[in-house]
Each structure stands twice: as C-alpha cells, then as structure tokens.
Amino acid sequence: MSTSQETTTDSIATTENPQTQQNQDAATTEGNILTIEEIHKLLPHRYPFALVDRIIEYVPGEKAVGMKNVTFNEPHFQGHFPGRPIMPGVLIIEALAQVGGIIFAQMPDIQEGLFVFAAMDKVKFRRPVVPGDQLILTTELLSIKGGRFAKMRGIAEVDGQKVAEGDLMFSMMD
Image (tube, rainbow, N blue to C red; front, side, top):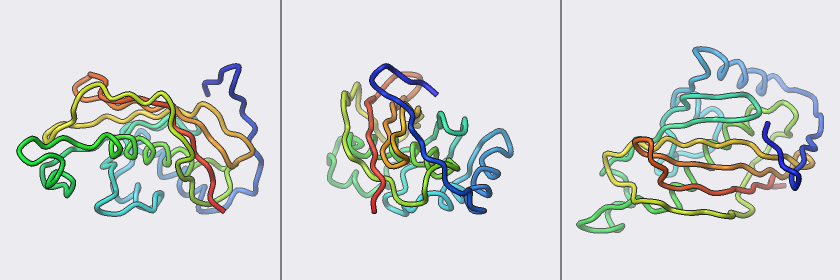
C-alpha cells in the first residue's frame, strides 16, 4: 500500500463475515479478473450507472484496474454533445470511483456499508473520451482512516494515454 507523510493507515478490525470471504475468493480466482456478473455482486450500481465492464487486475487491499467499453448507445451521448459525442468527465471520475469500490468491497477490516464521494482533488482531464474508446481505469488505495474514510488515486487511460486523473476521497454512509 502506498502511503505518504500526510496520509496514514488506521483501519479497524472487524469480524470477517462469510460474504467478504466469498468476495475475496471470487477476486483471487482466474488471475484476479472479475466479470460484470461478479462486479454486480460487489457494487450496488446498475444500468445506466454501472460504468465498469470488467476488472482486469486486482491486488487485494491495494489496487484495482477496470475496463469500460465506451459505446454510442449510452444515454449521455444523446445530449453531450449532439454531432460530437464526448463522455462527460464526471462519468469518467465516477467509473474510477466504482473501480475503487471493488477494493473496499473486498477488504475484511472494513465494515459493510456504502462508501460515497466525500471530495475530489487535483482532478484533471487530458483529452476527450468518445464512443469506440476503451477506458482503462486504475485506482490505488492511498489511505484508510478509522475504517470510514479513504483516499485513492485514480488514473483513466485510452490507448495508453492519460485521459483523466485525480485523488478521490470517500466516506462510509451511516
């Protein structure tokens, strides 16, 4: 796990439940790849807001890499922008957050619940994402505090080029 002087890891120990163990087992089979069906078992998002098609790499408690195939059929392209479809930047950041959710959903020391955005920092958009692109979404856990707050670094790429990046902060909802 990456840490810096300003971030510390202070996770709390909780009793591991069978669902968490089942989730960890699913991610450690077949080279740490998760299908859309397995992702739906871990995350609450559904169409049209399920923005991750597959997890292609997973390092428990540290990092996840997801993939999203961007298609013209997605509802946001009807109005963003007619004649020149561009994926909204907020949806790219949301996709990164969902990949981060895969890490949280499988951590045994985190209480069950819903992590939501608390803040975003240093977010930059580098180039447009358009239908036909394949987004590679990498999130790395930077810190957890009290088992309720977390910080991640997210990078989205298309064809090896950075399209978006930023630090994402999360909070557990009561």
